[in-house]
Image (cartoon, rainbow, N blue to C red; front, side, top):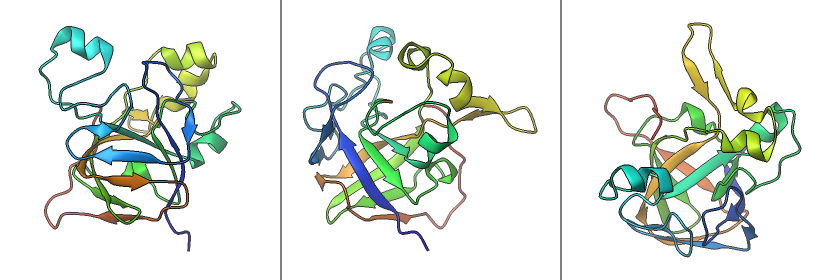
Amino acid sequence: MTIARVVSVSSDDEHRFSKPRRHAITLVAGLGVEGDAHFGATVQHRSRVRRDPTQPNLRQVHLIHRELFAEVDADLTPGELGENITTEGLDLLDLPAGAVLRLGTDAVVEVTGLRNPCVQIDRFEPGLLKQVVGTDAEGRTVRKTGVMGVVLVGGVVQPGDPISVELSDGAREPLAPV
């Protein structure tokens, strides 16, 4: 049995596509990754700020499963797709909205939705967007570039930290792009 864990952590204080890897990151409740360009209670994504800067920031933390790297025809390493946390042993895309992730000893993140990949992925690696966005047998769009979340409880997260998942007892709403 594979144990879910943090493989890598990344952050960047500027709005760039890829994020440099760090030894550790600090999550702050209600705000996100300390020192990251997406840190804040209201939306920080530049295109979303232009539309409505008062929107709540549902994209405080971006998580991608390392298993995605083996599924695509590109040489990817953690942080290159802009994620803050690279995981292993956890099917992030199968989690319902509202799933709670405990990272390490203190940090707690609530999953808010799917990352909606954009054309920047093709600027990073031509042809990659078609590999990470497709359709299933029923014709529904499938997005593979991880999940977004908000920080419920702050704490330090570092490679090797275990991840546990808590699901609510109620109905499980599938993830949608945020």
